[in-house]
Image (cartoon, rainbow, N blue to C red; front, side):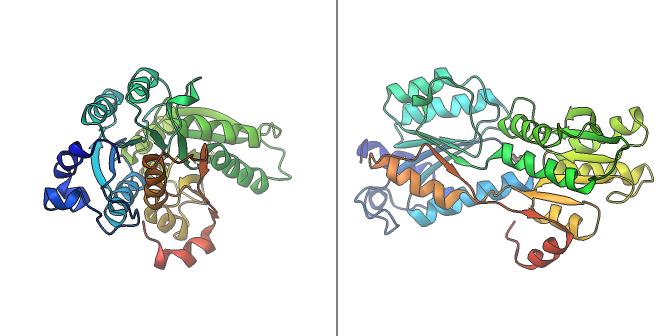
Length: 329
Ligand code: AHR
């Protein structure tokens, strides 16, 4: 493995997340799945902790690094692109073996990723895509197909209102402006409903993927529009916030206003089982094990597939009740 002399330093700063101990031991085979003689170091920059999805994703990355014997340098971007850029620059300076990150927004990464490329450090995009014409700046993208998620949400609506001719008024609570999941979930949803002119998106606003954001946006929609039929929220937290706003306005979520969300976190599935949400599209946050496999391959100089898509399903009320007892997040 490259940069052996620096591995101990990186690993040492990671004692909490990687469960490391003695420096000398960290440079030897950890008994993880790698089978190498030196510990692979991974710099990971996370978006923040805006949702239960994100919290589960962070735990999956941290736990999997420990199980795989990888020295993880975990940096929380706290919802700021500048923080993520600073973290990636730091990883380059520390000469980690591999960099992975979940980009808060799609654009603005070329310069810092060029620095990683110049330093010959492979980059793995995790969860979210970036917008660049230079695909040599990263080795692979591991995560969901957000356009497909948006399509699934739209298709449910098409089926639900099949045969109806009257206008169905939809409001959309979007994820963080400029982020891949917000952009792609909007595109997929629009594609699925565009041949059905009675399905009308009458308003759309950024709810920042948070419960507070969802509640705030839903309140403005309720003040502005009469007779909203459907809320399409880009994640569960925003949908739960919409429930709060609807209940505060004396309306019954799931009955007076239908709600579709994405994620299928425990909180989302509980609301679905209780009839307050109507349909939930799954987005799987448990990317850690696959990420660690890719990290080991990248560190070993192996070729990676350019895209690794997560397997996902959809939930109605019955299916939510069925899986809740064993849901991990
Ligand atoms: O990028 C994945 C999205 O980010 C999840 O749907 C959302 O909950 C999270 O904050």
